[in-house]
Amino acid sequence: MEIINVHDYDEMSRKCAQFIAGKITSSERIVLGLPTGGTPLKMYHYLAQIINENNIDMSHVYTVNLDEYVGLDGSHEASYRHYMQTAFFDKVNIPDENTFIPNGKASDLEKEAADYDRLIEELGGIDLMIMGIGRNGHIAFNEPGTPFDQGTHVIQLTQNTIEANARFFESDDEVPGYALTMGLQTMMNAKSIVLLASGEKKKDALFRMIEGEVTEDLPASILQKHSDVTVITDTEI
Ligand code: GLP
Image (tube, rainbow, N blue to C red):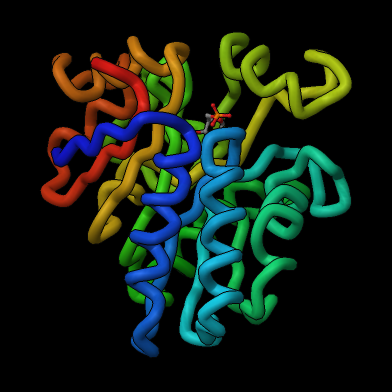
């Protein structure tokens, strides 16, 4: 694991945006795995800026998002589809048909999960996956206890995650109890991974991810077993 220490949130966001931009400037087809949450917001801002200033063509860029809340469709302001449109997709010239996010309103969620894994396979796998980390060490929505060998699946969110994400909703009660998430196996299959973490709240999870034992109790610890992981963080560990 390579750890890049930066001074603050702004530097973390800028560095990550520059790194991604460096990967998409050539016209080679690329599949990006993309996260949501508070952490990557400014990264998307800088990435859109670089893409537009340099007229980077996006027709060869495909994106698969990590997760989506069950029960929310793209018109819901807290859905991850809505987040991605407003934070990034609507700001750049990426074709709509290149962007994929699990459908949280699917009538058959098990089928939606299996279809999502098939889609990733058909795209040729994920070349570069960007992700954040939850305070309890979750990545995407893989909560503590999730088996390491799972593909995309439905998961029940923990109270800790519901509380942490309630700021995007009117109240805790509005946060869906379930989500569709890429599994840890899906994520580990990505060729390279960049993990972003900012602030003291992530310190404990980050420390255990890097230094602790590899255990399903801390889902992010599986990343120790991946050969190409870069962590960009302003958190001193
Ligand atoms: C949610 C997302 C994760 C994200 C985490 C941390 O649970 N599903 O992908 O990493 O939140 O979010 P934040 O960046 O807001 O701290």
